[in-house]
Amino acid sequence: MSSTTHTRWRGLAVGSALLAAAGVLVMIWGLSGWTGLSAAQATLSSPTSLPPAEKLYTIRVQDVTVVTPFGVAAELPSTVTTLNADGSYESRPVRWSPVFAGTLVSPGIHTISGTLLADGQPVTGHIRVFEPGHTVSVAAIGDSITMGYGLPNETEDCYPAQLGALLGDRFSVSGYGASGTTALTRGNAPYVNDPLYAESLQADSDVVLLQLGTNDSKAENWRYGYELVADYRALIDAYRSLPSAPTVYVVLPPAVQSSGIYGITDVGVNLVIREILAAVSTDAFSDVTIIDNNAPTRHAPQYFTDAVHPNLAGAQLLAEIAQEHITGSGVRH
Image (tube, rainbow, N blue to C red; front, side):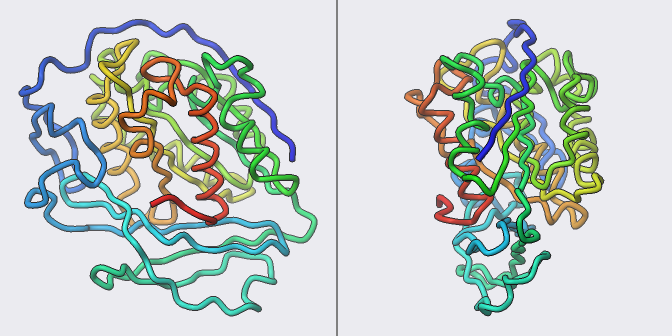
């Protein structure tokens, strides 16, 4: 195993609260268009985000992809992410078709069909097997959460470094966390303008973990929120178009604890998450696997140094979640 962490610090400006008291009507872009939600409704993005009558129906079952070095057993997860018409998402059990033993001994991307247990909707899974002797490179893209801000040793304790230890010697993980950065190109600190963005592209990795959005929720940035879908898609495409044709995972930001900090609130982050889900809710992005760091960290202050940044245990949790989705083993549900 090897891991490298590239970090760039940028001061966090304390902005005004994104939203006022609960009861304010918020216009958000759901998967089927702009929707009016109260602030109380907007605070939840998990399966309980809205009353069942308002969730309407599932409009997309996102593909899942797991990767494995040659000769290492792989399995598809027992759950997949479904996107609902109201803009919410949930994790639902899936049954996969049998995988023949000889299928995974050859390098390449192997497609497996499945169905949702609840209603039989079709699901597509992919197992990517790399060439013999190839070390699978992983690039963790993000902000101060990826960088490891607030940890005793950012380089050794951040979640990308811990992920490298979990994945083992057949993987190499590099962290490209730039503090304060946004997915929005008109945000106060766009990730695409940071030198680490260029470095991450030059790395030409096999796997990309894209976790941005927390800073986009700040009031100073959210005024451009209507551009987030396009900007997020552009980020995904920038990595997907690399010569290595990496497997891209979109990682939903962790939940914000208590009343928030730095002008970042849970209400704001959940509005951002809905935009991220809208960005991948088309056939052109169906191959992008979603990793949910939000639901497992909701109402879990024991994992944070402040309301936003994970502590050592929180970074370990994020690493475990990423490892489970990349390899398909023991995915949480």
